[in-house]
Image 1 (tube, one colour):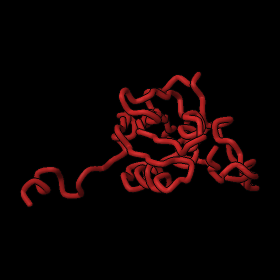
Image 2 (tube, rainbow, N blue to C red; image 1 turned 90 degrees about the vertical axis):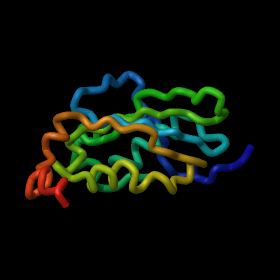
Image 3 (cartoon, helix red, strand yellow; image 1 turned 45 degrees about the horizontal axis):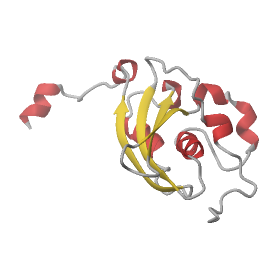
Image 4 (tube, one colour; image 1 turned 90 degrees about the horizontal axis):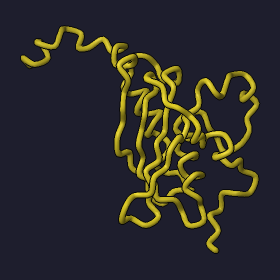
Length: 154
């Protein structure tokens, strides 16, 4: 078997971030990622790794873990489906709580969700396929500073 090189001294993400029993909320940001795990990495671990690395996870225990509620802020991989006709590819569904993101900031949201996960060694390939942004988060955006019509007239 091929060695992936990430197991020694590293927490398994699926123990915390793979939560198939989780029921999504209307206020969750929902992302669908197409994931191709490295050989030997189960899809549950790959999906959990994406949820962890794009929210609150890190590869090791840090002293600040006890200062905040992980359950309040963590992303959760709640469903995994194989991609029909594509061996070793999966759609991993991840729910993110709104408390994880700065209000009214598209930059913060995308940096959190896709900013750090694409170079993750447990994955051969990763692509964000779909994103659902809840109304509660959309309402935090102020819109253009001089109004929509002035932006259209430019």
